[in-house]
Image 1 (cartoon, rainbow over the protein chains, first blue to last red):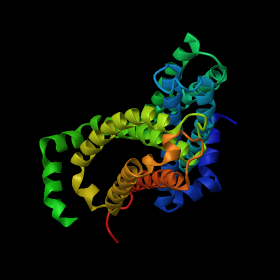
Image 2 (cartoon, one colour):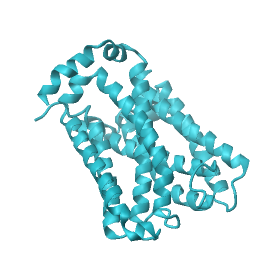
Image 3 (tube, each protein chain N blue to C red):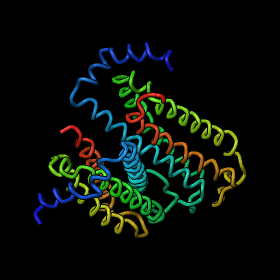
Image 4 (cartoon, rainbow over the protein chains, first blue to last red):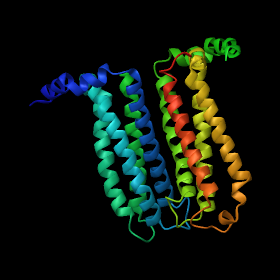
Length: 156
Length: 167
């Protein structure tokens, strides 16, 4: 099945019709879950990055803070992707051929991969290595880029 | 709310209001800034609340978590407030007509009162002063109230675009 066929098949699916034809408050609820997921994700990333850079909570070990934030990062990602996937299903053709959406998905894949590597490297005890501190900045910038590309979807 | 209507019309028709509304880029950029900064600021409040409830960073004293995270949350709130004011400026009449906007303010005021009660009354509790890992029930309830109220602020903020008039 080609990508075009896959998009057309999704567009014609019963679930796609159900979401697209549902009350507009269903879409509003999905957007709210999306925002709450982003809230959990960005704030725990901010907490972990600031700690890795030595800007706060130096009384606590980095591994303690990373362990505390890690669960919320993946919970936030799961909520955002789950709600986002349902929004995508409501009109697959509209999103699949939108350049901002395609860019967002590429950035999202990079951000998830980078985050997995970073969290693995940052969970060790002892002061964080320079590469980990730099990695925290790069992944945080990637996640913000995902957000900006997402915001651009409605405007390109 | 109707007494705000003339002011809203003046804001919307002001040069700043029309400039934001008519610019191709201004509105999405300001809206994106509002969303990302509120995610960070409200989320940092959630992290403090989760420490008060006792599910996050239990090995760190609650006072330490508050003192360290609050400045970042408050700095972010300045960006949230400025971007929110600019969004209101450009579409004031439709925003104030929405019941969701009124409820958003009610929830924000309640969240502020809850924070004030925490600062003035609960922060004096001996368990907080002595850096206990598990905090008294009243403090945990204040954390749950804060998380719930800020969630309702986000929910009603998102609904401004959907609930356009009072029933």
